[in-house]
Amino acid sequence: MAGLTCGYDSGVLPQVFLLVEDESKLIKLKETEFQNTLLSVGLGSAILGSSGGPWVAETLGRKISIICADILFVIGLAMFSMAPATEMLGRTLEAEELTDKLHPREIADELKKYFKRITESGVCTFPRKAKLAMSQEPFLRALRAGLTVQAAQNFSGFKMMLKYLPDVLHLSGMRSSVILSQVSIISSSVICFGFLCTFMVIDRIGRRVLFICSLILISLVHLGMGSIINTSSKNDQMEENGFLGFAGALLYTVFFFSYTIGIGTLTPIYNAEIYETKFSLVGMGTSFIFSWTLALIMGNIFVPPDSFSKASGTFYLSCGLSLLGLIAVYTLVPETLQKTPEQILEIMKEKFYPWPFNSR
Image 1 (cartoon, rainbow, N blue to C red):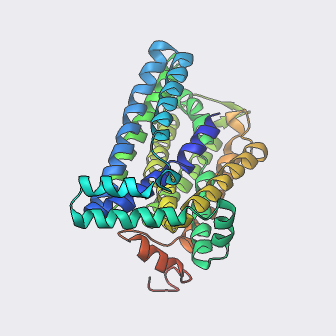
Image 2 (tube, rainbow, N blue to C red; image 1 turned 30 degrees about the vertical axis):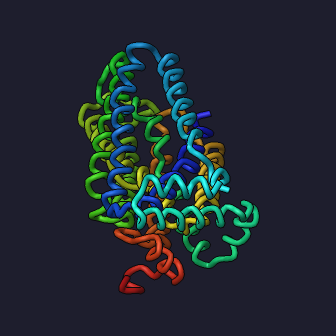
């Protein structure tokens, strides 16, 4: 159920942002201001949820906290469903009359053009639109980039790191009664800080640079964790070692931060930017289907061992997969920093050659 709801949330709801972004140009909002506003709302909500989630779980219990989260999720989807669909605009005359009353003539004329454009694009059925998209070379290049970042996100080993976090804390000598609360505090705190940093640097550094830096750090963390396990394991038993436990906790902090500021947060944002608006639903839907299919395959084939003392090979394998994702991102993913949808479309019309093969 978590995968289903998260997949719906990340695959469908970003379409709202694209439509609102198109309409925001009509009221002359600067693109960077609009993106920052949307991102700040989303990240602020994530920060509140990450900060309050552990407290609710510890105070009211896990079951009640999950039920409360589900209720809030249903309420949010109900609010989204109240927005009128494109088909409800086939009422053109009423919309034009209301537009003339609410807006100055210049903005009203632009809104009428906007209504006409989206109603005309809605005539094409989804299967026909998907077939048309797959015949367009710019869409295929954008889809390749989107699938690449989705695969790199799955290869980063986030769930595996969560699985072994209690063992790392236990390695440092922390008692089991304290580990449960510390896991949520450490992970949520670092993730919140990473969200804040993402908001500050996303429109300054760029998506591609953050992807690459994130995957480099993630690869180093996996390599370091494998070395720590090899050093501290003895006769298939993990002995308490304060220094190695501290080093492991530090590596976990680096991992959560690098994952949040890079491949974890930016993957859905990047996918929402690279597709042409009329094909965005096709592209993002395909991308997220690929992501969850890959996660299902890895969950059944790439199963971490139950014993932490035998997990060094798993971390080394995750390091290799992260490096593979890094190479793929560097080779196939172009930058979209400060680019309009029209400029991104022009980028996707040409083959992407990274440095040193091209000056771009």
